[in-house]
Length: 480
Image (cartoon, rainbow, N blue to C red; front, top):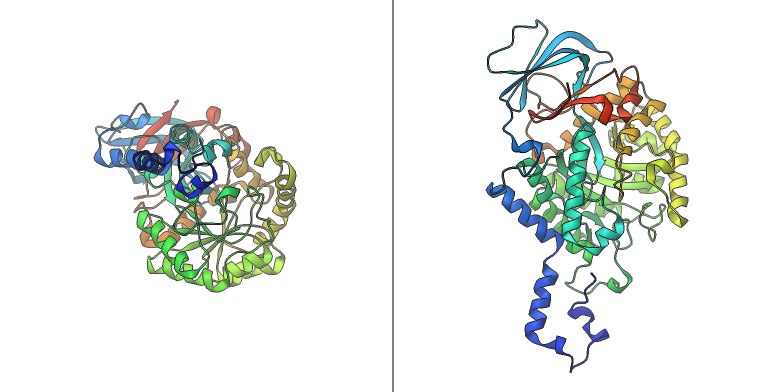
């Protein structure tokens, strides 16, 4: 439901209207303050207090203290081929041994015989939107906390069951949702949160309604109140909003450098922040021992992000070869998505469809540049606003087979993406090693029926082919 606060009362009320009663006004303000953000904050508080220790999900059960996975073909996240003749021992939430001597199992251990299936690290999606992935845009804009939370909760478990044990969340009010996962209330992947997407007026994350323009001093738009976006137009406000995300637990900061596909009023070719503004944001992030990622598509927007000191750029589908060379010269990461067709974006019309076609045309070009110049590349899916589309997450990964070997594609979704996450430095929410199968790494483990190094496309059907999912030492799926 859309509510008009005191800011717009003059449009429909007069002095004799009962709504001007001070008691009713106070009550209306109370209801307005009960936003989705407050709802999730309450859930997070419950999680922190341990009041609801696992509600109807796989995390409710106490995990076995030791798990031995034997009879495996091992992809360790770094190699070109599978290793045979090893077994993996997990204790608590860490891998304690990759045992090539196949020693007898220790006492008090749960044994999973993998039957010579492939074992690999849990996968990492470096561009995900935990709250937005499965919730239609019109539902999000309604601001109803119940349906948003329910849809996002269901999708978090589905994400994990597709084999993604970690995601880097590139924008959204996900802090307390992450807390609910980490404390066992709901199943889902580890989350590296960015918090609100920080943009100038008119940028990709500026989704204000017409009646919210122009902005009133001290009053926030609906998307800002929800924690989805922070709209800033001076350096002071930019620094403040960045510090607010870090205060809430952001592991990295996302600045919106230009327009986007899903924001119809923000063209792909536009540029928002100046180089000095980006550098000011980078300085704040570095003061907190982390980094800035900048959303950018066009060459000049990408170049400005790199010149401003961004450690990572998101997308860049419209960049030219000279811009690609800058990534290598400046040792900057590119986190991008292999969009190929409307199957990857869902049906779009009008300006959205036109922009999507530009992405489809740009995708093969940018991967050619990345391979040519050896650019540090992260993989992500960037699925948005559709529970039907989220299953494309695995297909987006297998698209990498158009330019990379199967081993390179799997490395990108495991150890390479883990290296990108390591840019969070002291702001990492998880103190341990991700994306590899080795001693002392987190016990995030998948077992596939078949060998993705031979046939990457078998990963497109995780329900059938993904037999074991372990995250943080807990067994979430085991059909063996």
